[in-house]
Image (tube, rainbow, N blue to C red; front, side):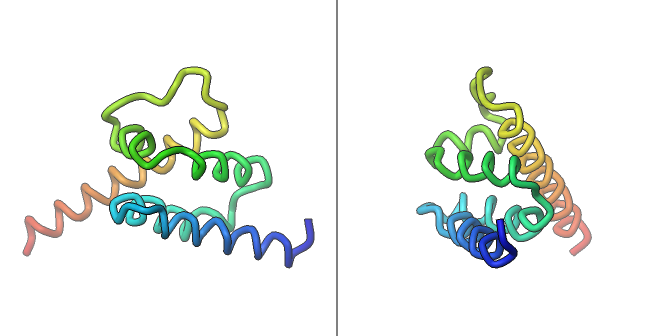
Amino acid sequence: MSDQDRAQRLSRLRYRSWRRGTREMDLLLGPFADRHLAAMNETELAAYERLLDESDPNLMTWLTGQTEPPPDMDPVLRALLRRAADGIRQGSAAAAGQRKTN
């Protein structure tokens, strides 16, 4: 894949991450995409594309830990979900700490 093709792919994935259809998912996936997409390899990018094909309600429950993703889910996709969920929990903890000090 050429640098230009990769740049277009990353741009498309960022757009899809920030414009999911629900504001909550935009705010969960958009920052994740901004932080991590550039460092992902082709396998991880393909898994992230599959992740974006999932419905917002499923993603929301998986990312917030309300339910577990299906056991037969692609391992790379499960790893991405775990990384995104960890980032969400860390961001929530940092926000809670800021509220307590203000």
